[in-house]
Image 1 (cartoon, rainbow, N blue to C red):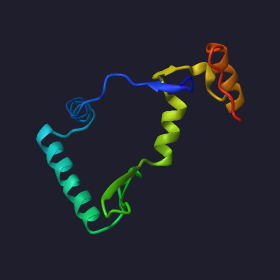
Image 2 (cartoon, rainbow, N blue to C red):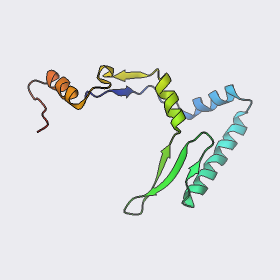
Image 3 (cartoon, one colour):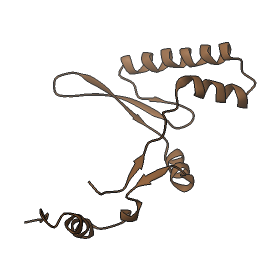
Image 4 (cartoon, rainbow, N blue to C red):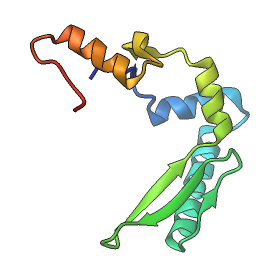
Length: 122
């Protein structure tokens, strides 16, 4: 309840992503959309064949099945991307003051906010 979490801003929609890529490359909107469409086709082709698909940027798509035979797609970004986001994050946090607190410290924090209904780990 009081653990640190990111306050998500306005979602970045596909049109914004497309416009940003066009602005930073020499690609036209049509050529970019064609490449992205073909990328989807190739990712689907690999996944439907039961293959893990790795992109040049390190993003990884993996088909995984549950006990009922339903296939889920697990997406993993590169460690490098995760490191960059962690090192340069400028978004907003809720309860940032609780970053790094132990479970005992969080229980103490919660109990201070809710003395009428204290939490215990018994």
